[in-house]
Length: 434
Image (cartoon, rainbow, N blue to C red):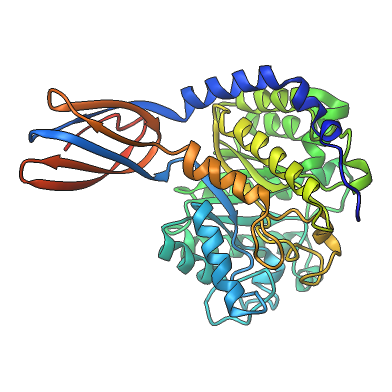
């Protein structure tokens, strides 16, 4: 694919709505992602150095390639690129790969390796080492069901699914704060696909409530039932209707996952109304924001397509920056998860090929591990523009400032020397004494 895209055509809607979008985003970030903090000092402090070290907001990515690269140096480079940007990692719990043989579950680090499906313990160790929050994906889905399950009828499948929930909860319930409990069921019904068993999504949510009482339970949905449905159905898009019904039934849903994979051919990319319509984006976000539940942009693919065409990679970067800013500014948004960090390692394709999802080249990094402009754009936002760093002189034993929610290292200069303090500043902790 060697099409060089026209920026004006691809970003037409966002260019036309720039003034409106900029105002929304500027005000939203100031209101929802920042707070007014006050530091009180017990000693005579003349200077204070305020350095934000971590975000409260979660910027995530899949950790599916751990233990799967063809060379050790790529593994180490992946870890470095990952930890520079992200504070959340998605842990794979796809049933067919977690339990390829009935009763033999691949939890431990010494399990046989499967490409793009590291054993959960490998990802958990990675998260512990780098202070990253893990997220489990996914416990109930109509795809990636083990072949051996086909010999069982519906009632046995329900029993076996409950056993799966119980085992995962016992091992990871105290380690992984949140799980995509049910994945893509609205689009499954919307497109008439065969179900795992009748009402499998409702039963999955009920099992989530039973076995993951203290964990965050997310209902996660894909493009067809959200962005594509909105183009034709408006507010009656399938996921919105499903969510209303599940809440009416009292099913345990704590948070909402909205996927955003631009899986379209290069020929259909310019003039795209499904994904790259700024007005639709704002309207859809407002619809789900109205539930007043924490939200996630849970899976992201923004293509640059193959060929390493600089113009296309710059457009990918501009889309990523625009959308991340829009999502970051949304009231109830809690996390944003990029799906494939490195090109050439996506699903349904041999590594390094342009088959399957590799055709979209939706990574932030090339196959050779060099950074794309989109990586640099997100690095600038996450590590610079959206972090607070202040050097200031203090008066009257206090210092007030406005900053982003997160963890801070506060260094104060007193008569007896320099003191360093680590504090978390957010809505529940607006004032601290040092």
